Each structure stands twice: as C-alpha cells, then as structure tokens.
Length: 529
Image 1 (cartoon, rainbow, N blue to C red):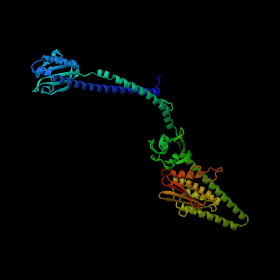
Image 2: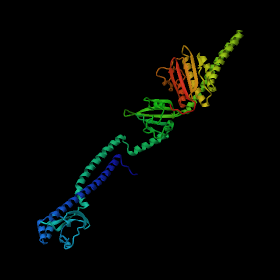
Image 3: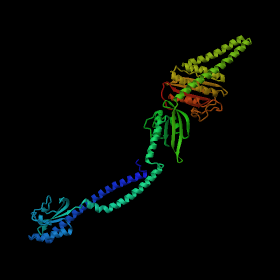
Image 4: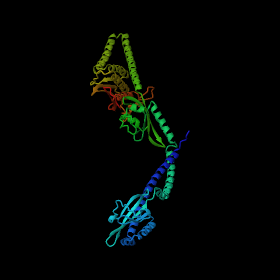
C-alpha cells in the first residue's frame, strides 16, 4: 500500500513544483530579454562599423581616384577589429570589390529594399547560412559633390539561445537558490501553522471527519441547527429543514431571512440553555433543546436539536379533554349527591312542600344557565363543556358567567375540539385563581370576529404577576403553588400551542383580576409563532 505524503511533504512538493515552474518562466523571460538586447547591440554595432568604414577618408579617396586595391585591406581590417561575420565593399553598380569570401568578389550584391544606393544608410535582419544576422549598409560618399562611390555592408550574427542561456546562467542559479531556500522554509512554516490549526490532523483525516459528520448529521431523525454569534446558520440537517419549513440553502443566512417565526427564533437565539421547550412552528409542535457551545473559553454559538411532538400534543389534548369530562362528572355527581341528601332530609322531616320548592329552585337555576349557554353558544361541544364546568365552578364556590355579547356559531369538528381545549384550560386556570379571591367569579366571552374565534376569560383572582405575561405560557411555568402532586404549568402551555399551531395567539393581562384573550382562525391555517 502506497504511503501518502504528510501535509508538510505535500506543501513542500507543491512548493518545489511552483519554484520549477517559476524558474522556467524566469529563464524564458531572461533568455528572451537577453537575446533581444544582444540583437539590438549587434545591430547597432554593425551599423557603427559600416558607417565608420564608409566614412574612412582613405577608402573614399581611393574609390574617387578609381582605385580598388585599398578596399580589401580596409574591409578585412574592419572585420577583424570588430569581430563581424563579414564586411563587404561594393561599387555603385553593386559589384563586390572586397569580401572575406572570395566567391563573392566580382558578383553583384543584392541590396534588396535597402536605400543605400540612394545615399541613405540601412539596418535590417537577414538569414545568412541558416542563421539570423544583423545587416547594416552605409553609402560611401566622395567630397565635395557627395556622389556615391560605393557602399559598405557589415554582417554580424545574433547569439543563439544557448549563448543567451549561458550568459544568464549565473543569475538564474542565484534566483534558484534563493527561491528554493524561501520556498522550503515557507512550506515548513506553513505546514506547521496549518497542522496547529487543524489540531494535528492530516487532510485525509479532516476529509474523513467531515464525511462522517455529514453522514451522522443527515442520518439522525432529530433536527439539528448550529448558529454562530450573529444568528447565522452554520450547521443544519435535512430533518431540521423539514421541521422548520425553510429553504435548503440555509447555510450562512439568518433565521429572520429564512422566515423562522418569532417564538422559534427566541428559542434558538436565547442565551441560556433550553431544555424540552415546546414551540409551535410551521404547523408543528417542536420540542427544542438548545446548548450554547464554546471553544478555548470563547463562546462561538449554539447547537439546537428539534423533535416533532405534534402527535404528542394531539394525545395530550385528548387526555386533557378526558380530564375535563372526568372533573365535571365528578363535580356534578358531588353536587347531585348533596342535593339528593337535602331532598331526602326534607322528606324525612315531613317538609314535603319545602322539598318540592327546593327541587323547583335547583331546576330553575340549572335551566336558566343552560338556556343562557345554548342561546349564546351554538357549538354543541363547547356548550356542553360550559354547562359541565358550571357544576365544577359551583363546587368551588365560583360564579361562572357567560358574557352577554357572546355569540359562537357551530364550528367544524377540528376547530370545535381546539376551542374546547382552550376554553377548558382557561376556565380551569381562572376558577383556581377566583377560588382564592374574596369575590369569586369567572366570566367567559365567545365570538367570531373577522374570521377568528375570540375566547376571552376574565376572573376575580390576584392577576398575573407583572413581567410574566408571556412567561406563563411556557411549559412548567406557574404562579400557583407547585408543592402538590399535580403537575403545574401544563394548561396554559397547551393553550398557547393550540392557538399558535392554528396561526392564532393568546395573551394575558391584569386589570382587576386576570384576562386571557385567545384567538383561533376559523379556517385551518398554518401558523408560525
């Protein structure tokens, strides 16, 4: 099995490759610049030699007198002294009279597009013997008429690529040494810093850790949400996206941008630890557990788990309704038992007429309240609940009233069940509070306003303590004595969840007692608290 390079080895190898690439590039640029400078130098040198020889007085006088013997001597001297490849002297008719190549003597020199025969100098490039060379031409002018007595052609070869590379080699070796030293040193320092930041793990280990984390994150059935200190999503799995009903591209976005409701944002962003907090969101009841996280003593955000407990809410609501029925039946049985004992005692005392009058009074009182309820509340389930609660209120010595403005029509089955849950829990809470007050009364108002069922329950109790108007709707929060065996802080929490799940709300206030106002949309809308 091939052993992979460590992070330091990979960085070093990468740095060496980069250095080699840079070196090749520097070499190419250096050789190109060196060649260009050499070509410019050779051109200027050829032009200088040509102009110097053409301006030689001895050569001009010799050609002016018609003599050609001096030209070969002057051309060879100029060639040997300048190191040029060739120096050619030709007459105005282009006949070569001096050249290092004997084969050129007597031939006509091809000046090409050079204007040298017109009295102007020329510098250009030509291919000579398979190589490129700088060619300079200069006219030989006789005094005093400045007539053309001939011209000089100087040829100098350009240096080859190898020559340029050899010339640049010392500098390139210096660059290579410095770049290698800096690259190796920088790679080692970088590798050390990276390993310290990655807790000593190699890239393959980090990749494996990320893969395992993603597999675990998206494999669990609970929703997981990670947030930074600015409230941006840093971690989220598919289940959390489904439960919160938010877009899939949630990473890096804030909860408000994603459309998360106010109560859920409060639960996710609250500074302290949250344990088993029930929150309604996107038509579901979610149990939130939030834990702030820190690294090296510094807070970096939080991680929250979400569990869907919608079915549990439905079960608790059904159990709550069952409890209401049981409590009211027990209260009615107790009330009827007391009244039967009263009637039996009157009969035993021979007060038959008083017994009849007592029966009429009880029957009239019950009928009056029942008629009031049925006239104001057309929904059978809610009406039956109110009538049954009257017996429970009587047992506690509380006067249960129906507000005169109440007018509740018949509701669909699901909404009727939700309204009954809300009314039952609010009445229980109100009767408990009113039972401890000097004046014991509870008033219920029911109606439909703008497509919403409004439930208002007032009592003569001590009222909600200041500052707890929202806290009392959280699970486990209660203003009553919690020393008993009965679990407190459940009823109002359930009311809040039922209302917010339908897209409504419930509020509390204190003014001469407690006033709870609950709203439930008549249409089964999905709400986000």
